[in-house]
Image (tube, rainbow over all chains, first blue to last red; front, side):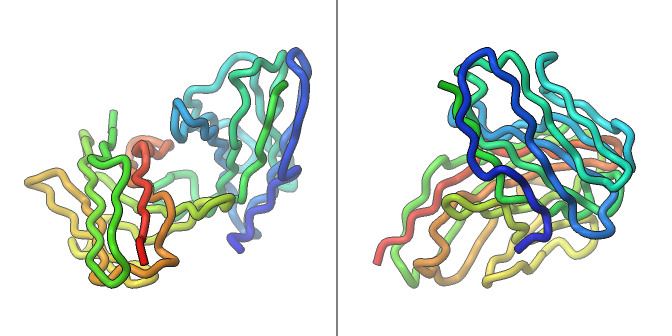
Length: 114
Length: 113
């Protein structure tokens, strides 16, 4: 158990809908990272938050947004969903703001868009 | 920007034989390098990391990797494969000036009895 909790584990929704994925980092970790894993794109970095503020942005679509709350949990919001958004979404956390420190990954949320 | 290439998408070995998973990286600065493992339907787990200390890094479950700057490589090895090693392995590079980690495409390791 990495200490990073993601909910829900599975999500099935229709095209055009909006969903929210939740991540609770390890106790004491200030940074949260979101990744998307799909068969054709592999593991892609989406966005990072550090202590409530956006720190880095990767290949995140404009239809997607995230935030980190004062209690350090984070939510990833995906809207106007398309079939191609079906993927495994991972959250990771680390103590510091730089990812050359060890990152701990949650077990992921599997999103299926039908 | 940094990048990483895993040279084999799939490696198959017999139980008890050595494992070699190859990784080459590109980085403008001194990189940090990681190997993560992902078992089916599980999250990613850190196997080992290199952050400019000893070039031979020992990790969990008997794995180790050697950082070779001249070859820009960070290959993962294990002397004797176990059935439980069957999983997807990701080589990852990060440098001090970036906040994101770049993942390789992954290598699927199959272990035959």
